[in-house]
Amino acid sequence: MAFLDELRRLLSGNTLIVCLGNTLRGDDAIGILVGKCLIKEKIECRVLIYEDGLENHLGEIGRLKPSKILVVDAVDAGLEPGTIVLARAENASHIVVSTHKLPLSLLYKFLRDVYGVKEMWVLGIQVEKTDFGREMSKKIKEAGKAVVSLIKRAKRETID
Image 1 (tube, rainbow, N blue to C red):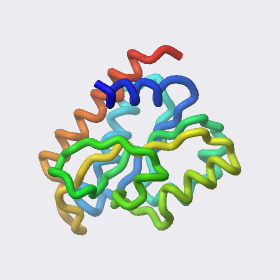
Image 2 (cartoon, rainbow, N blue to C red):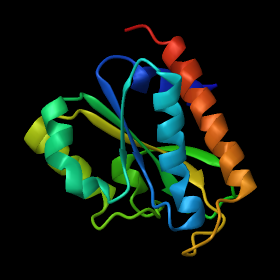
Image 3 (tube, helix red, strand yellow):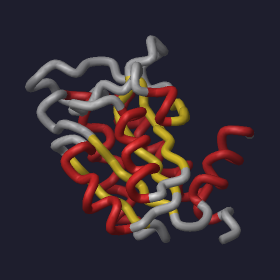
Image 4 (tube, helix red, strand yellow):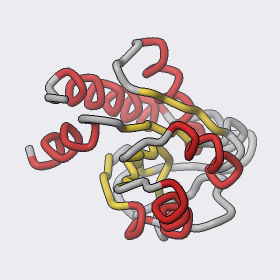
């Protein structure tokens, strides 16, 4: 229950959801899939999708002036494939496997210091296979659907 409570808190107010991934690397595409589903579902939250790394879009993100950012991405935390994790960005750089060139902790510090972002979190899905040219695993797709449902539920239950 603490997970959902934290997600509700994160999605209240001026929150931006940033979905990351690489569609050429199997399970690493999960953030893109989640982002597309969230946009299709028209949740009441701003959602951006980036396939080329968060560091390439800091100016665009800053201009939107979010107070909180929730990054949805593939992670490798040594857990069972499909496990969903929620972690502060400054503590999660070692588990993110997407296309980042810079650690999330450094990106968060920049967004905090330059644009006033108060919090940045990672909502990650433990991957199984990220080899080039692979299809996304069924277990990871199912976890992605669960993340979409969690975000929709948490957003519905937030009090702005």
